[in-house]
Length: 91
Image 1 (tube, rainbow, N blue to C red):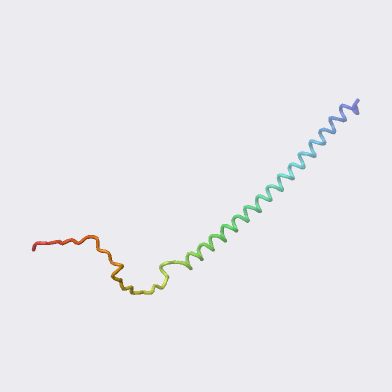
Image 2: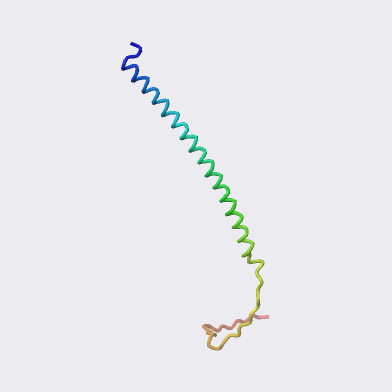
């Protein structure tokens, strides 16, 4: 009875299990490879963002800006005196 219907079903189920485990193992390998690729892409993007941020910081550095002095004379209508005080310091 080594070739009975029950034994054949059990053998078929075992073969299906091996097939599924092999497929799942290859799925895991593909997923790990994709994860490694994405991590590499992330590292490249972070490095690129760091370079661009450094370039922008250098380009718009306020200590390197050229300043131009402009004299603006006040108009009488722009002056508003709110309080007048007198201070005396004895000598």
